[in-house]
Image (cartoon, rainbow, N blue to C red; front, side, top):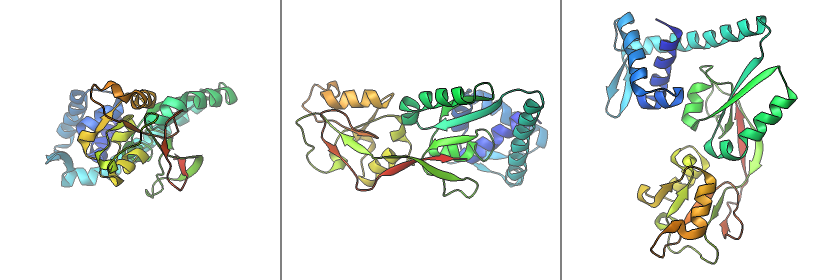
Length: 262
């Protein structure tokens, strides 16, 4: 039994998915399955089993979960303590949403690196709100920049960046019919039900077949501005976190805040 195996188990248990755990770890699903198999064999229990489309804890897995979470966190603390004793730079592992990764994360990490040159090594990765709620309390990441995570008692979340959510479309066109019938162009954050874009689409009851996901926000803006290259006369609309030039926009009354969560 290793800390790596316990960490994999904790992720699968919290995310309820082998695939989601593999995505977070940046490894293949077979690699996650092999790690689970080794832990199962060592402990003589299935630990997590398939329950419909999700993974559910067995009685043994449920009892192991709290202990494993503590062991993974202690392992991270032990590694940090040894690095400090060796005089190595401290590590800061940042989680961000896809939108923040596109526009904010790189200059933020560079500025932070210059200020704490040689003292802190900073890295960043993209995560959904659900993944942030798993990675932070299990010490698999240090801080998250994105949605408000204050609903989780194991996390602290503070507003750090005010912004407005804007819906943009092609110039000289206004949408017709209810928003649920508009074609929506979104960046990957639109697939996260806890993101602002995800909540907006849910509030408008937009069906999946009216949503098109682009690799990034800039690509979604460009597609919205030129009609997404569609051969049929269709107006396209993009949910974004800032406006696009010459595009009509819809602005919610209340400004929103990006939060730093730990």
